[in-house]
Amino acid sequence: MSDQPPILTNIGQTDFAEAACERLNGCDICPDYAECLNTRRENHETWLVGERMKDIRHRIFITSGKGGVGKSTLTAGVAVALARKGLKVALIDADIHGPNIPQMLVAEHSEAARHGKGLQLDEIGIVPVVPMPEEAPGLGLISMDYFIESSDDAVMWKGPLKKDLIRQLIASVNWGERDVLLFDLPPGTGDEPMMVTEIVDRIDGAVVVSTPQKVALLDARKSISMARHLDVPVLGMVENMTDEDLFGADQVKKSADELNVPYLGSVPLERRIIKLADEGKSIIVENPESEAAQAINALADDIMRALNA
Image (cartoon, rainbow, N blue to C red):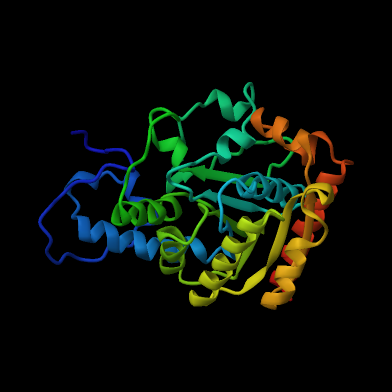
């Protein structure tokens, strides 16, 4: 066992009281990591989350009731759009079992890709990955994908380990000052949304993504119910992959009206979004005049307008 094990190492030790730690560095880069107690590390990370959050103005999560509705692709697009508007954006890929955001934002021959899964450290924590340093320099990313040996590896974790990881992804990263923090949550109403709200203490809003398909809308309603149970304001619903020939018009808007939540607009079904995401590129950068890019930019504006209201 090394003196400084990686962030995901779980070391069992006997618990007893010890003085509080108020170091600003994350536990994973602390020289006393191996000698420190589990309970003390957990308490320190909880305190450190609060310190990191002091410099982040808005915190929101983007979720969906059903998988396959393009939630992560849309989250990546919104993050790039906000950064290109001059905002400093933190993006946490909190989908522990399917962390796909890096594949959508990191192009094969980019500077970020050359680092591979090797994260950079400064004096107080992990440095967020900047996937598009020229096109969107204000965007910083962290993901579970950077902490597993292969992207093909399955992450089969139960609740307590997942909560520890989410806390570490926030506490151990030197985010600095940020205008907005986006959490890309896994689909459904499982552990992760509850864990995020418990760890961060205050979430300023939730954006619920759905396609116009009826089964997706049924599950989107559950996501709205979940946000309300967690006392998280629902900023609104987004219709993704809009195609009136397939699904008819305004299906998500109708559900938003029925549920008395804002409707944030629609993003058309656009093949280029999928192709570019597979290449680690964003339609916001590559095809800014496209209908889809303009829709995502408008969505980003609406989200910030709702947060600042």
